[in-house]
Image (tube, rainbow over all chains, first blue to last red; front, side):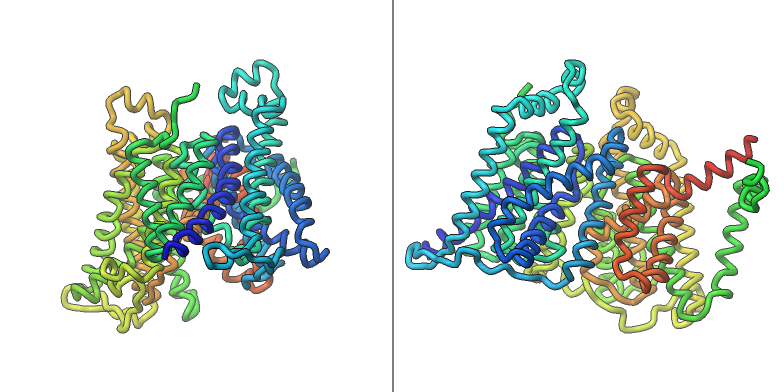
Length: 286
Length: 334
């Protein structure tokens, strides 16, 4: 029993780190551009589909870790330029626009990739014994990649000039623009970065889940919950909440139905929303 | 310039501008009455379905266009309406009127606690909360574990042909013309009620809240309660549409609860225009008709709607109906 709890908690942790990576992208886009990106789950899905395509074309899964985030960056920049930029003055219409984007991405994948779910073989193919059970090494590798990407993201945000600009715009857009920061360029890069992170998450998760065009529909609510519980626009809070939620769900799954686990985390979210709408990790940063 | 002025479309504008709104509505009513006699068999139910989905899209326009709440929970209330309809029909043994009422009641009652949570938060939180509530409901229903909560009434097909009892006579849905007229009259009644509502002081207050919430609060409006009431009313309308749908097609589906169905309402309403009650119907007709007749040429027709949605938001945020009204008005003032 305790082995099962441990394994499921591990799985939850790995999944939570991937969700944290995706939710950070959602949160940074929200914090800077002031829109909830409903297409974010579909960016994740497109990343997984691209990983599958890279394997199909080159036979090498590891190449996807390099190529797909780059494609994500370019795709995100193009979308920001063409779709989001012209309507940036109306946040609620921008959200509806991202919903249109989500429809386009899903149906485009269904038209090209097909409607049937596909699986990617475990690219490492080694299992190690953990408490008498075999555990996939790839899952540990996935967790490592997610952690590395999250750390790299925070380093970028806190140690580079561009990251400092991004934090400045997030704190006070007007003042930042008045100080001469290139706001348009910052928005472009932010959206590209967010997309790129979601698509990297898709690559990392592709061998763990099955790849299909509806993949994003399940991931988006998870990211939403992480963003709500962690506090909107609170980046470390979002990451922590994602890991915590997935861990709790993993542990509950060991003795109850997965549905019950999901319902428990949804109830946690509702309570947080009612009691502390600013998130449980909030310490009003000014 | 001169070429454009001579085209028949340019002459249509001044011609349309001569009609008063009352005449326009009379024309519309006449059109709706005569329509089934020109539509071939088996298509009348489809036409009636457009009105039902239009009403569903309109319920979204009520919360978004008239109260500024971007809700992705409308599908839950549509589904709750289907559930209430089945509950009324099979559990309580109501006739058609009772079942429609119980659908309205089920959706509105469910919306009371949901709206209490959701209307306490604003903008982005509101959107996320409505999505999460939809996910919660679909997760519970999908799992099949909490059967004691919903019973067998979520997905159930009518095993008989519904009847519309009217005093001494009773009309059967077996006749498509009856189904059409019943649906259109019920939809028109709902639209009339909603029209009165959004033009009442209550509706005006919500517009004020949408435009400037701080100012609305300063002049003494109870902002959260007004938003809550509107949320519940719109949910009831969505549930009512669910009942009409269940009557018309005689089947209900778990799928209707999913938030992607709310997304459908969003797409249809925004394409038609959320600033009026007519707009969502225009958008729905456009969506369903082109889906029906053009998807045979191109399977993934939803892509086209995604693109149309983006174009409408970018160039005509007031939607197709808003474009039309603006175009007619421009001729009136000239």
